[in-house]
Image (cartoon, rainbow, N blue to C red):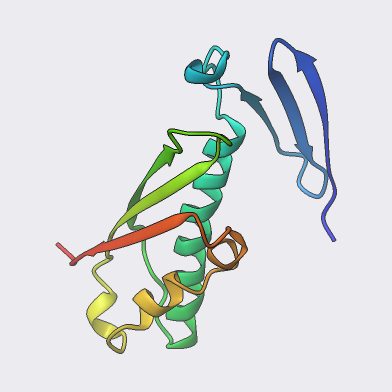
Length: 136
């Protein structure tokens, strides 16, 4: 169990504290929804959670095959619905595979990406697109 505490600070701005680590973050409503866009929005955090969960799950899968992945890059784009209710409609994740990829069995990282806990936690209506770019 993980406890996160927080406070609504007014002006569509919130602060949250991850109690186990002491790390904190702030959120702000996006500019297209009455906010200033001064920080991650709550839906930006969902997109970030999706991308980082995929990356972490891929690294765990690689470890199971005796491969420690070095740094690799990803980019997530979040698209909101055009109609109500306002919701995340589509997440597009691009991953630039690390150099260690050829050492892994084919499809290992791709399979891992589609089985991360956040992927499974998002509503089926959220379109999730993951594109892999080969190692440079």
